[in-house]
Image 1 (cartoon, helix red, strand yellow):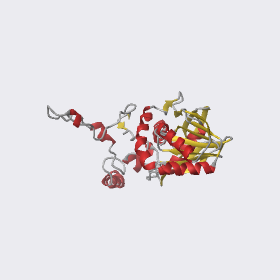
Image 2 (cartoon, rainbow, N blue to C red):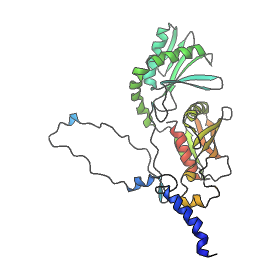
Image 3 (spheres, rainbow, N blue to C red):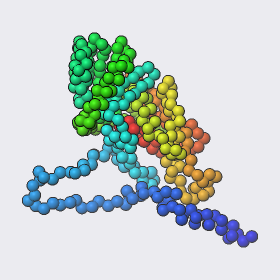
Length: 322
């Protein structure tokens, strides 16, 4: 058989693959567009204008960190989620729990929630024995408290009696804050100034492993991450939440890694499996102290899991906590 003819099936397969993709792989990869983007000249308004009449219609927040490129490829940064929303629509008041502990997450900063908590106590006729401006109301019926939530612009509200959550009180508080959500949601934008504080910090260990340092206790982090993963990791064959363990403080997810998504045409053709396949990764929370938690990603499959894959996954997961 002519040796030139031996390559004909491969050439035909390559031609078929290139017909179904725009630039690379089966999907149009537009990351390179960011590299080629050109800065346009700023808009110039006529002289003699009244500057008080002009302002930014859609202000762009200051970027945190710098753009990164891996070799010749450029990784487009993920958009920062808004404090009061994001890719997944949120309720103004939501429940959180871990073990026997229960509390509420309100979509407004503590400075806005605190006076509403005082209004609740007065409206219910609770006997206030002590009031602490740091966010604690001691009453004869129990202890009401508010503090900064894990995510920027959120508050955590608790109702405890002898160190245990009171279910009826939390139900009443949920109704109280839900009734005020229409007006409070606009006021909660003031709480976004807290988001300028970088609560999450990426760190690369000497071994090359990437981890995320979170300055909050492990139970609060697990409860919030559990809620966010249930909402966001729900895309079949792309990202899915498979297991969650509150005792071990970890999660098992199925995730399409960056390496798998970025496989080139010839890598796919010459691979034993031409399909793009997610792999199982365990997200592990470890306590480093009363108010310090470390998040890491551990490969649970036999497939390759690079440092870049770990960093990209941790960036997505930590974005759910901002």
